Image (cartoon, one colour):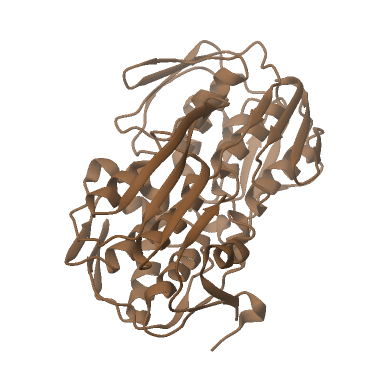
Length: 437
């Protein structure tokens, strides 16, 4: 078995998932808090910030552009420079593996009065960017990329952006947020029409920073900003990270787990509906609101699952959770069918193909379709899985190891640190027999 320089996980079967644990802060909200805090006036203090590689790449980018940011591991303090206070970076801005960072920052930087170049790691340099570049060009932004529509992205500043009306061609919170950030700098109003709801963290946080937007049914409108005002943000635990433990506690016999302080934004929680349709025993306790976001403790008990046809209207909202939802489907009785999930093809890896490869390697019957997968419930046999450098694939097969006949080794797990630092340690605390291979 390959150790891949210590970046592999080995998971032995068995273990009961129990107790009360807290997963790291929400990645999507952490990115947005940094971005808006940087261009706000005055101080912004962030607690619950995700100390992951993706979010730290965002922080580093703003430090390159002259924003004072202090981070002691518990509190992030930002001395905002105002809407027009960013400065040209002396180097290309390297955003590592973070698709959220590059797509949102492309919109924000399109409205600045200086030039910028955005780059990333090997994986990010291959991901599609035209979906944000094309509408920004229609707002009068001057942006270039490769002929393939990939990084590097070069943005020429000093163009006055113009507001547009734009109907999202795909359900993408990153695209929507990119245009909302550009809309802060555009003359007139920018209206975005979304035919399927996507996560609304940007809209909520803009209001927290004193620039509310308007929503009329599926039309979201933002006007030119005069100023954003720094504030205190308390970030809830990341629902997408909690998803791995939701499935772990569901499939491991005898489990009884509480996940504390998890964000349950209705534009993020479709995975709960899917799991409940499959028969999962999940309850939300201590519901409340913090920094404009709904929060609860999630109580999960082990359950007998059954296969379903996953409702397509739930798919866009649960897109990040599908690797581990597929693991749940593999443990369910009968067949589960996923369709309408073509977006999974262009994540950190082709997640449909990556999951299929892992299923084949561990003895699960599944077949891919163009926009999804058909999974036959059964039993993991054990084996060796390549995560293809994708953090969510790695953690999904770690969860599968709980119920496999033999150990599962997952290789190429370094990128787990992008979204879930401390995953192995927290998984051990919850009852999983996992080690670095």
